Structure formats: structure tokens, C-alpha cells
Image 1: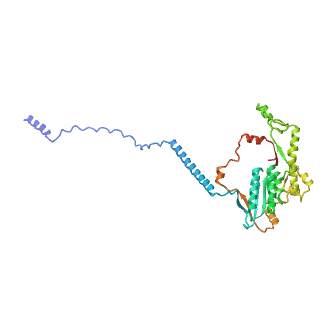
Image 2: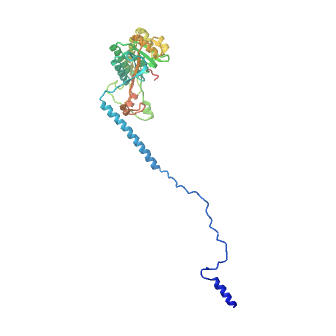
Image 3: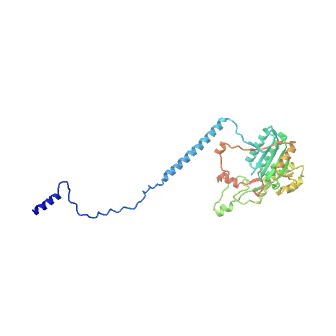
Length: 363
């Protein structure tokens, strides 16, 4: 009977739906270690240098096309206008009635053929303006070529002959040699207190490359000429005294005598020919000393020159104007750097060729 009880117990322990007996309890397995939190890594931006390069190139290309388009439009308008190019615009220097003008013509920098052409155009514009009553020639120049200085002198004389108007020279800074040569064509000369003038004389210089070429560079120049004096003077050898005397006789002396004659004519009311000859030794003078030597008529400033020319013209009031070159697209297209050094055959020849000048040698 006992065995049956045990069987009943075992059978009751495995009744259907009751499931397997629970195993003995045991600790759960340890959880795997969790890594520390890290923020998600952002993708690195690669520096695309080619993209930047092409972007810059594209921008420059766009800008170049815009500039070219504007220049093209300017050229089309310039050609389509069919008008003669204006050489100068008028800029007002002193206010006054527009119907009565005093024109100020500028002679600035080295005097050469281009400077003479510039003065000619200014005088021609003033000659054609019926409202102009008088002229001021503002000079700030150490002089320059004999031809350029003489042309400016003659153009001022022609203006006086054609118009009968008074002309006053106003010296700024430096008005020496060729600058003074041009000034004596005027009726009166007014100079700033600090102006330098005078230097009545002629100068000539040239280079002799013989020692440099033969002894330093080992170059033996060959220069062929037909005629005993054809190569006088030469930059390839030292000059002989005979050559120097020849140059003095044929070039320097005639230019010097013409300068003295021009000053005698221009300052005949103030100086005798003998006094001019004494002053024509190439000396320079400050404005006070030049006034004392009667090379100029007055020491003053621009307003003093304006008052002087008003008195000569019998004017109570006038508008003072000066001529300035207007900007144009053609100037931009043809612009060249004035400081560019062009070492071509022509430049080398100009540097080595002797030239007689009405110029203060300090420049």
C-alpha cells in the first residue's frame, strides 16, 4: 500500500498541463559590459582645393568679361558719336562771371615736343573761346629741349599777336633755363617766394663707354663713318679737343646766343644787353634775388598773378579756369606706364646721343 501512495504522489506531480518540475534556483548570468557613451563621429570635410581654384578662376573670368563688355560699349559709343575728341575740359580755379574768363595754361615738367604740343592745344582752345580776356602761363619746369622751349615761347607770342590779350607768367617751384626762356615771352612775370629761376645758358652731355666696353666687358666697338667730322662726338672714344671746340662752335654757342637774345627782347624795358650778358652765366636765382636782378617783375602767389593780369586787361572780375585732359576709354585702352623702362635700340641711342638743352643741369 505504501508503494501505491508513492506512485500516486509521483503521478500527481506530473499531471498534464502542470509542466516540468522547477529546477533548483541559480543566479542569472552576468550581463555583458556596456561600452562608454561616445557621441557619433561627424564625417570629416575634405578641403577640395580644386573646387576653390576653379571657383576663383570662374569669378575672375566673369569680371574680365564684364570689364571687356564695358570697354566695348565705350568704344562703340565713341565711334558712333562721330564727334571730334575733346582735348581739354575746363576746371574752375577761381569763381567769377562765366562771360569773362582768364585762362591758365600749364607748362609742367620736362619741356619736349609733346609738352610744346600740349601748350599749343591749350592756347588754341583759349583763342577760340570768345569769353577769354587774358592769359596766365603757369610754369613749373627745369627746362628741356631747345626746340620745345622755343616753340612754347613762339606760341605765346603768336597768341598775343592774334588776340591782343595780356599774358602773365606765374612761376611755381622751378622755372629755370627753358622754363625761364618761355616765361620771357609774357608781359609780366610773377614768381612764388620760393621759386627758382634763371639758369640762362646751354648744357650738353653724353656718355663715353670706351673703358667700360673694352676693358671691363671686352667688347671692341666698330663704327664706320664717311667724313672726318661725321662721328663727332662719339660715345665709343674719348673726345679730342678739336671735337669739343667744334661742338662748342656749331651747337652750344648758337643756342646760347639765341637764349641771350630772347631774354634781351623780353626784358628790354628792365635790362640792358650788357646786364643780360652778365646774368647769362648759368646762375640760378631765388625769387627775391631774381626780382633784385630784374629777371622777374613781382614776388607773389597765384592770386597776385591774377590781380596783375586783371589790371593789364582792365577787368574788375573774371572767372579763372584751366584746361585739363578729360578721361576717355581710348586713354584706358592705350595707356602705357610712364615709368616703364624699355631697353630697346632706340632707348639706348637716346641715352647715349649728345643733346643740347636749355635745362638746369641739377635735374
